[in-house]
Structures are given as C-alpha cells and as structure tokens.
Image (cartoon, rainbow, N blue to C red; front, side, top):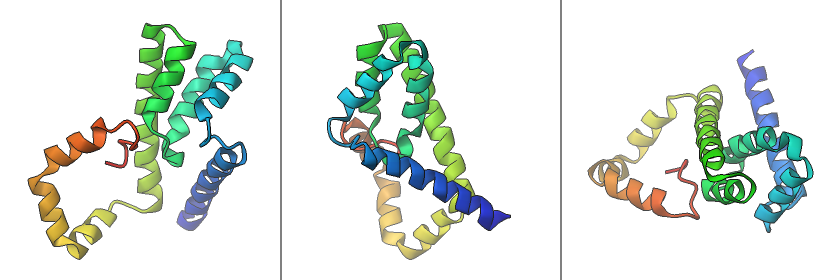
Length: 142
C-alpha cells in the first residue's frame, strides 16, 4: 500500500510538471495565468486558489501569485487569497514530503554533512533572511 501511495503521489507531481511545461508557464507565466483566470471570471477565485496552492510542486515563487492576485482582485481579497494559498501550499508540501521521503531524511543529511549542518545552525537567521528576501527563490525551499 505504501509503494502504491508513493506511486500515485509521484504520478500526481509529474502530471503537474507536465502541464507546467506543456503550456510553457515558465515563460511569461503571469500573463498566461492571468488570461486563463480572466477567461473564467465566475470561478477565478477557486481556480486561483488551486493553481497557487500547487505552485510548490513546480517551484514557482509566491511573488508570481502575489502579482497575479494584485492584478485580478481587490487588495483585501488578494491578501486573503494569497495567504490561504500559501498556507495550503505549505500543508501540501509537508504531506508530500511525509508521504514520499519520510521524516528520516533530515537525520541522513545531518549525519552525512555535519559541518554544513553546524554552519546552518550557527547562521540560521541570516540564511533564512537572505533566502526569504529574494523574490526569485521559492522561499519554501529555504
């Protein structure tokens, strides 16, 4: 059962990546996503939440969806939608990692690279601040 579940999760992730690359959302993606959401104004809120929540699997920075929300929705609505989408994205990432890799990966990395781990422990606030402040790097990785 565990292998079947991991296979389904992996297939789901590959399907998201396939759509991302097939429609070339990495190139001028803001205009494409905005155009898609404007084509379905009745469902744009729900579609935005779905697309922005799955952004983590394609490593698209949150900044892209902040811009899209700012274009399509009023400021309060945009803030709420981006906040909900980020929360959903992080929850999905947590369950994806827990279901596929497991939580033991952290111990393996610590044991394999103790010097790097100690360096990160000493400078964790600086590393986090630099990683999160970059609009290009997905802060979920940091």
